[in-house]
Image (cartoon, rainbow over all chains, first blue to last red; front, top):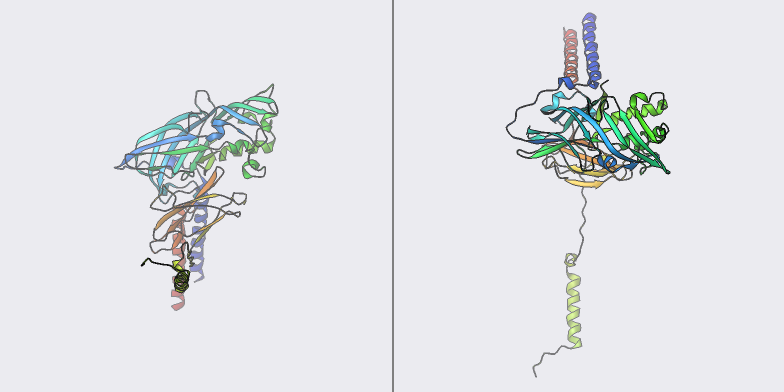
Length: 283
Length: 155
């Protein structure tokens, strides 16, 4: 009898171990395993957009009082895919969501967009003209280093002017690490992603640059400012009113704390509207 | 002269009768009356906090019914503690959505109103299909073990 109990206990422990291993594996990036697009009789136009909001189009005063305006805000996007999921995907679930996917629509190619364009509210990245009708409530994309063009080598390249107390700095800040991003339903003052047969709908990749620089209009103790770098630490590196830096060459030039903040910002820059995304560095 | 006359006495008599009628009439005849009733309902209380634990005081709440995803069924504002209380329409079963936003930041949660008119939480977050299968197997093994234990005792 004790032998049977030992055997049963052994299997029980093995199964429990499997359970926890399965839980840990849910944090991995799964872009290579995503299911293929399903067939559908009724279709519409699904428009993929990107938005940097007024912060980028109009400029803003960051947490340490520098007034920032942006001539260009280049972002390079790739591996973009929108999903209809049921039950609706929630980022609390983690990366593993393929069992929820009912429909997948891909936007092929690598796309560099300029979010500082004042006419782009938001920027149209591309569209799928025969997307199955339904509710697109999950969005995957990657920020990758641009293979060419004005932002070559950078996933994010911000070019602009910073001004404070009569001092002006012309800056170019490049972020050169690739990031995978996965978000759920659009959160905002309107609903997005609901595609009716014969109609059109848009899904939006949103970028919050106040997460990078902070917002002077918010309380200094507000989350948005506590977790933001600001511009002051970068301004200290400017020479003769010019700052031209990339993330990879800031090591040793910024304090370790500030560098950690800047790296972390790359993982919480992207949203779907105001909804947060999962983020993981690809390199 | 058959000219009608209306004396002060007549007017007083008419006024007295009118006053008696008014006094005897039910209160509902007054214009602008207000009738407030109260009854207990099954309500949902949400609490919206930033990651730091700071309440989203004044957060803008929008609640969407399952059969009308594009227009909010109810809007409101969180109190100083980030709380908002409402009772959904239990005659509209399906997945309801609650969106809370403030100053460019927001989130969305869901709950389900069942056909029976009760509320159930959505799918537990963080459990993958593999985890569910393994969990089912663990429960199954537990049942088998229990059955074996009692069958041995009986024999």
